[in-house]
Length: 70
Figure 1 (spheres, rainbow, N blue to C red):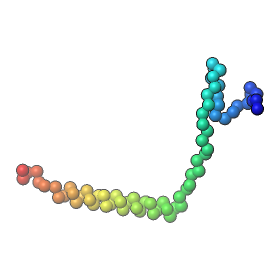
Figure 2 (figure 1 turned 135 degrees about the vertical axis):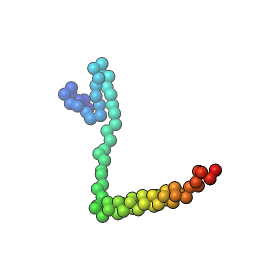
Figure 3 (figure 1 turned 45 degrees about the vertical axis):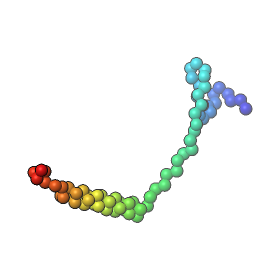
Figure 4 (figure 1 turned 30 degrees about the horizontal axis):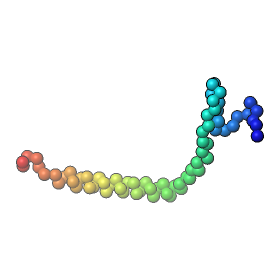
């Protein structure tokens, strides 16, 4: 199977010096879109996680020893 000079094969190019370059062609990615219910659920989980993290940081920072006691 010989290709003419005007045909271009995907994944192949020829440099000015006549050497060919070949690379892999990956298939198109399929992107799944999330429903609005899933987005809201994930948002609530994220906000709750940040709240727990903030409460933990607040508890630690308010119970630090007084540096003037040393």
